[in-house]
Image (cartoon, rainbow, N blue to C red; front, side):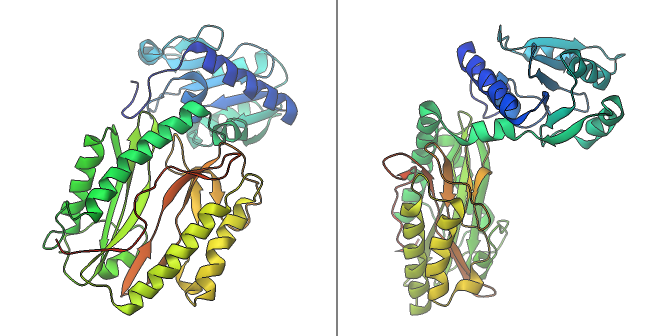
Length: 378
């Protein structure tokens, strides 16, 4: 692997097909050259994961002409060759790699419409601007749109990662993970160890939030000791063979009072309704509205203040986003979370999250473990 959690490279034919699709999209959008540096668009189309160095790595893809991977000479040995997809163009310490990129961009045509990877460091873009003075820049949505639609192998990877964290959530609900008397940080570390033990190469996060801390959606696990008679929110996931998992389940340490039981029933209903609403052709924002309508009707609208979901794949958060204002229709292969929440500041919070993939037969869940608010005493 090139980096922790990165999958082994695909056969060359996979990258050749992706490169061809990218060029077709460039043609349709009138893009002259595509420039990809850091981020996961680059390995998606080449198999190579660039290290976040101060030395420039950049794939130059002319609409008409050979793609070249401009890379520090000292890193070139890490590239797995993909003949017919791109050529490696190593640069030495005494060369200016930005000038090399500009030259390659102009070699195959006018380079007036440039699509730039959105994780390119600003220093390199600033240096490139005067070298391509007639260029108009846009985000490299060419590859972003391709990555949104997962193929069968990608969906299988997401299912495997989802099943792994399901098993951990089931252990949590079964009382197999000690909670009472331990700190949030200790439980977070425990979840992290289990994520690795279940086959992930990387832990992306392990949120553990007890009682009032659960009202902070991205709470950092602290030295607070978990006690009885409070809700515990656990949101965790990692990267397994290149693809991400993400799940949230809550448990109650004791018997939940009516206030929490009633709110969780609303949350459960909203999450389920939004999950089944994600049919092919449904706008992303309508999935968000489905969850929000139920929560608002129950009087908790002001306490659900984030989007309903995000895309997932090579990255934990990527397109498509399940949020008001995103009218993009779901397409077969779109993978995304559905995770409404209700947060009462200073008191408690709760969230329920699954990953789903839109298919022609309806939404396909990557997580199926119990959705109830399980009461435990451990």
